[in-house]
Length: 329
Image 1: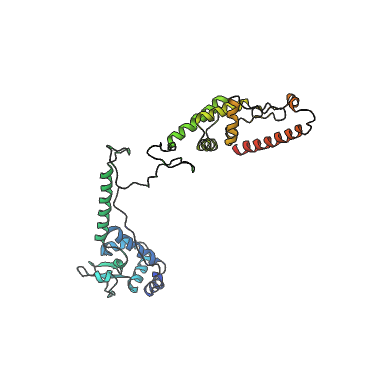
Image 2: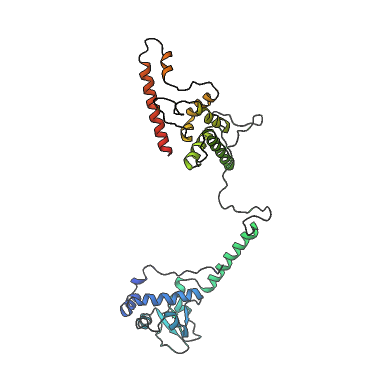
């Protein structure tokens, strides 16, 4: 890794200054390019705003151009640049506290950028900051002692974590009393990797029970399983609900009025009530929602409204499941 990059600093209203107005009037917009080239060179080389005389033509790219020499002369005439003899103390000039004297260029003179140190840090300040950052980075490396693959060679606790460490999440209901020495503490919520394992186990059970080996565990299915786990259902209960869905004639498309199969994971685990009903079916405690020829036998005499109410309920349930399947797809 190379040295830290230095940055140029300028005034946002410098073009409103009388010197810049004069330079732009004399040399056009090219004075900006010339000034920026010289200033960037000084910042990159850490020369504190001085350009050696034999480097000016190369840095400002004066060769082969008619506008750039004119721009350089405009900057000199406006007092933004100045030729200085060798060995002369130009600190006040580069701090912007002294006006240039307008000396002509000589064979051994240097070009000074007037006010450079008033806006930019000196070379010694830049080098000190780079050293401080390098030492700080080395201190962090020494503290963590990380190998090339990001694995610590030995157990070392870094002093400053990269992000706040969250407190453990505990599933404590509002009605539960606080934990005491005589009472067991509330169970901690499953760890993220444990929850991911449970989600995968439920999904694979659904694939096996309903022949969905080609289905993928997408974000919607993962969210539906996580929602039921968060409500307190165990993996065994969700798998039992998936198995119980095979005993629901409506979901399996055995209802004459709704031959469509609704065996999607999003429908089976739609909400807590659906899961509880399908668990009861799997345990043989709940009736299947079958309708058909045998349904009218137990209506009872004179109950003429029962079939209509049953049809309305099935229609509403069918529309609800169609909406669920549509949102899942």
